[in-house]
Length: 183
Image (cartoon, rainbow, N blue to C red; front, side, top):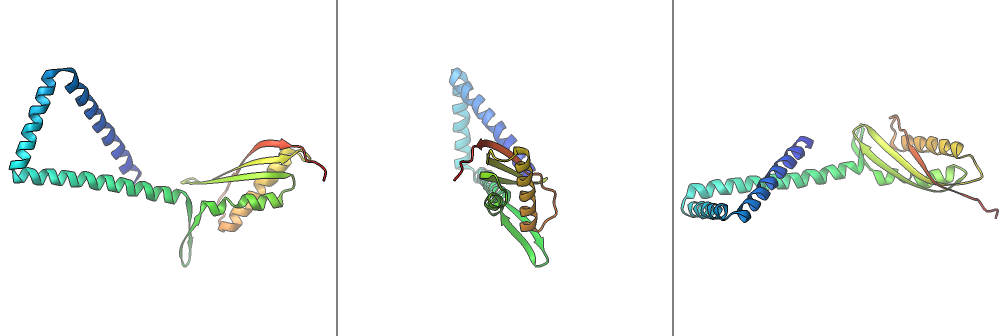
């Protein structure tokens, strides 16, 4: 589907370039405008009087509509597959939503001491899962130690939850370190 989408993008770009050049050309000179209007009159006249021309125009129009529809469907399917992970089991396929995997933030916040807030983002690509965690930490512990514990906890959670052994390298972004008030 990727090659089909690239082909469609190239064809659309060429079509818009041609239409743009044509539009500029017919507005600049009157000779081009007269030529374009006579060609349009001849084409519409031939289509309205010749059954073969009607059939050809109908065929091309349906073909272009089919390509547009396939492009829309392909892009929707790709977006759906990007927001989920497909797992294989002996009983069949299992699709796990990335939003379900992103719930690691609640688990990690309770497991790792020194985390005030954490927001996770998981992106599925052909190379695997890209996991990013933006965290706010308390200042009572070392940033390096807490970050390492967060990464370990994320890896354990995702591998346990999905039941996969794929190597996951979560990226931890410390957005803020705040002072922890004594209660």
